Image (cartoon, rainbow, N blue to C red):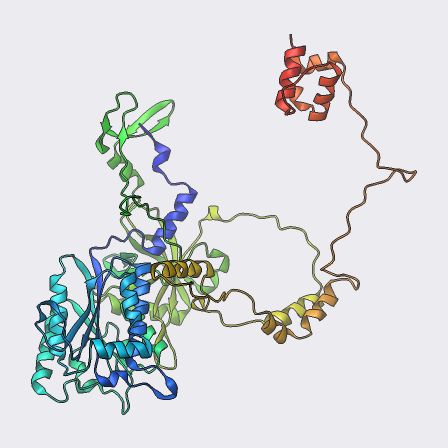
Length: 611
């Protein structure tokens, strides 16, 4: 019968639970994500930019390659496809559509696919594309119809379907109204089946007019802030990568909760993790003969009869007053349940009451879920604006999931921030700060160190002000994880050597010295003595000499009589003697020992003197 304490979490398990909440460990996917790249293969896509800039086709292939590699690392079970339209050659299921070339079917990305996309990059890639694909007439309606067939041929359950169109032509059919009408019809059919169509339009001479044709093809933006970004073409590779990454990543909630503002007033909200620590993926056990993943199964057997135990045969128990209290699993769940998951508003506090030392774990982000309850966004925005204007935070009780203990949280308002290009940097919502309990506060005894003088403090303030910079978490990659994945990529793609990585967390010594100038030496002069050299080893401590200047004084030998040793044996205090004293006693009485450990010496003396 299982002990009660095995059903409760210890401190290490609580930390693992916090990591699961941040990474969405409890999230159960209802299907796989899918992404189809629909790329224009017209001659205009292969024209190089000014000053040797890559062509639009080359930029697209680089982005496709980066998405393939990121999918392999982060979500290898997602499905990805690559389709070209406007080609001279045709290759698609049953060859039903002309000028449509399915380069990759909708399937999981792998090393071979990455190598095939790499072959289409650069000047050699353009030559290979001209030879394999060619450029011909374009029919976006046939291409969308072919993509719909790719989705219909998949027997797996898909949770999210997205299609990205890469082109630099705002009128792909050259004004052919019949083809335009067919493309609008097929786009509407795809959107009705849940496919989100995005346009990644590229820069071309004369500009790209989205309203000419593609405004009826693409899906409406999820947020109003994205409307301006949909109208601007991408002229640089980095801009294209950012836009594809923003669209390709599916925003998943850690939990969907109800924020109770009072009796009968509830707002549907979702918890999001805005930043998650990157970790190495866990190792996968493989069968050595077939290299297939091994699935482990755990079964419980009776210790006496050896019979297989079912989950209903296992009970939970707690010893109380020398009695074993047996409980069913549902009774234990009922005891653990504090309340239903949700957020309950307790009150409001000024922002001055929230201290830096209250931060005990990473915060999450709170955003309204209008699809769950109509009007949630309006009431949420009003609460956010009022809290921001009055500079207060909302104090709430939070239970993120069933059977989890409640926590007190502070909802700190955050306003929306946009950059010069009107792109959103940070969204509007509440940051959920987990607050500590009274037991989390501890009284520490600070180490006693000499206090710095005011001149030393002022000089260090000057140094710190010179070394300040605006920190961005995305500017520093973990070199250990980057090296790990580069090595895996080199093995999978049969590369001669992995790509070199730049360790961005190493300090830039030359730049630091240039900024500080003479401040470092001035600080050293204030803190260290004049003859101090940090590179020299400290002098060894000399032993205390006797009055005659001879060798150090030796400790007198402690000799015990036989009666004293017998008294120690009888009283059981032989262990209080030191090892040298026990060794001398063994030599004194001629006791042979099997070793030099303290217990062996004690056993030898006990057998000799205790008899």
